[in-house]
Length: 98
Image 1 (cartoon, helix red, strand yellow):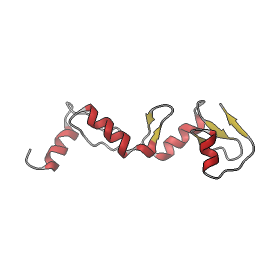
Image 2 (cartoon, one colour; image 1 turned 60 degrees about the vertical axis):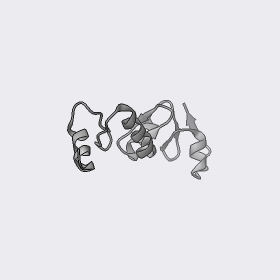
Image 3 (cartoon, helix red, strand yellow; image 1 turned 30 degrees about the horizontal axis):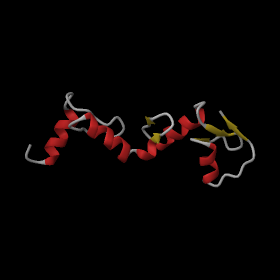
């Protein structure tokens, strides 16, 4: 392919190439796709569960409903860990850590 745009479109439209399930970008190999997911969508990744979500809101909902994460009973928000909740400045005294 002479131009990168044509190559990108080929990767995106070809069933022979992996595509990012978050943004749809296509890649030559699975390794390149995985590297893209880790770098471009890090803020949407649950490190504990090793899952990548389509949005930050979906990740936060995952933290709230998953039994593997901390939920603050005061504000009903989920966090990856109790420490993460404390780091963002929430000083509530009652937690459920499942």
